[in-house]
Image (cartoon, rainbow over all chains, first blue to last red):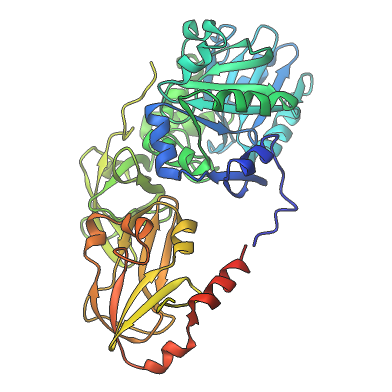
Amino acid sequence: MDDHSQTLQTPLHALHLELGAQMGPFAGYDMPIRYPAGIMAEHTHCREAAALFDVSHMGQVVLSGEGVVEVLERLVPGDIAILKPGRQRYTLFTNEAGGVLDDLMVTRRTDDLYLVVNAACKDADITHLQANMPGGSVQVLEDRALLALQGPKAIEVIARFESRITEQKFMSAAALTLDGIDCWVSRSGYTGEDGVEISVPHDQAERLARLLLDQDEVAPAGLGARDSLRLEAGLCLYGTDLDETTTPVEAGLTWTIGKRRKIEKGFLGADVIMEQIFEGPPRLRVGIKPEGRAPARAHTVIVDHEENPVGEITSGGFGPTVGGPVAMGYVPPALAGDGTELGLLIRGKVHKARVVALPFVPKGWS
Amino acid sequence: MSDLRYTKDHEWVRVDGDIATVGISDYAQEALGDVVFVEVPEAGAEVAQGGEAGVIESVKAASEIYAPVTGEVVEGNAALDGDPALVNTAPLGDGWIFKVKVSDAAQLDTLMSEAEYQTFVEGLD
């Protein structure tokens, strides 16, 4: 079988094996793809109760120093200055061409900024930050794990240990103590559900995970369910739906660009991005619902009614909550309207599909 | 005693006269996880030993089904259309994939017995 000796492990690795996880390589880490319950059951459990994910492979970075907000704003189009302490925002590292280097979460804290970046991009992100922050400090939190508890019961579970979580708004964060463990808890996630992401010291991660798994509402979920959940929620996966060749405008992420930032610009790729906002982008990311049951995977060719290739699926699979195949892909703006009929070239045959509004399932947070 | 013969690609075959019923092994369905779609070959299609005969899609990925023997497909399992999870719940029974008229019975001798397949699978872990 695969040689995992070169891969990295999270502090929960032994626990995953104990729980019977099927492990697989992801961004250099040996990660749980699914547990014995299976992706379908894990996905459904997250939509109905609470699922615990190990996302410790993601990068946690703290930026500090004078003018750190202004410096970060040169690298992302989001309005960071407007964030009050404890507030969090989804934004993007852009490049000169207006492409996306990574997507990330930024939380403003009293004295610094706390970032969560993608595992596969973290080394490049850190290099990028260091190169652009000569006066500031870029500290990678190598000694902290990250757990995500997601689902309609997640807040109720956390409130059992710290009632203040119920007052914390979605997309905000605070230092909370859970059963004596000092945690940094964001009310956020990437499943379309309400929930939290908990930054916890390595040596306390397993104790916290076991404590949460001991709660009746909680079951473990792997990266397989994480992928089907975020796809149904219409959320982009960096490296498939987003990359250096896609702009925020094409990706339907113009909403992440602050109003002030559009006027002032001053971020990498601003000229290209602003031109696309005014002139329209050459293509757009859309939700695509295949008819029938055959899933359309990434790289499936999208054709128009004359069977001319017009784009490509970037994420596609089966949506357990939807109960059928779901996908996202890029098409020309003329074909991006809801209800537009498209064809998907699957194993040599054209399958009917149509453009639908994202997300595929109603959001579970407010 | 089992009358099933297996391939290294984890298909099984059960022969009745000159008709072979084909499915995937319990090991294979477990490795694939929740099956959400099966593209079965249509009656009349010619399949060749070791050649592609269909596709099984799990939540995570698509995998080919290879024909264990050469012949003409006489039936695809229509029940998988509405209930692809039969491949998970009854891989050796109602979750069969297709039936093929065996054109060369000698090909069956190239397949593994149940015991040989179990040894083969143990060597994979």
